[in-house]
Image 1: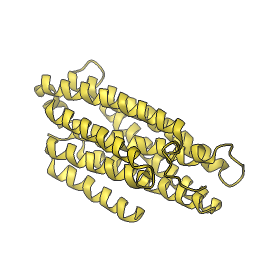
Image 2 (image 1 turned 180 degrees about the vertical axis):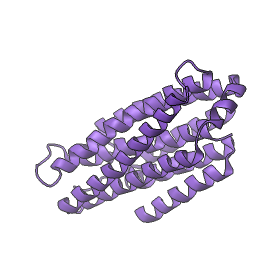
Image 3 (image 1 turned 135 degrees about the vertical axis):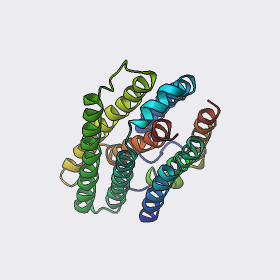
Length: 68
Length: 188
């Protein structure tokens, strides 16, 4: 699962650079942050409220940056 | 070292999560300032972005995500009581993290030689503030990784969860912050 997560992160990073558009790159950034949170920060093994709070934070940051 | 789903026992420990939460909130404010400057000075951002190297940006990103994956692997091995191999994974993670540091220093020196300093334009003000703040966190995270690697198979930690998983958690926070900083500076 960690290897798959790393490969996904590498692929998303390359796509983000290739696409070049800010709104898409921010969305991919949030997606990568979610993956790092769930898998590497082990939030998928934690209490659900911890994972939910983290996802909420990412969502708020993403929406705020897209609106700015 | 077992994982727990208890509310009061998040992976990495409560203390490190409090620190990481505060740091992420601070980073979020920095992102907001950068996004605001980006909107307010489109010309300065367009000119500044033309001086950035996308391959360098990608290399920095790949170094961080690879180092993060290696740190996660180190924590996994530690949880399975394979302390010697955990140490090796932590060292590998720190090694790739050091690649990020070297690349960032080289990139920054190139920008300085090209005259892109603080005060040059709104873009470079935001760039040095955002990436400099992130770089300080990377240095702290790298120190934590090396500190854990030095002790993980030799000493007993008072609080293993905070020392081992917490140090990796701080390192992953550097990844998360970079995932938002990168598009704000590099995406058009």
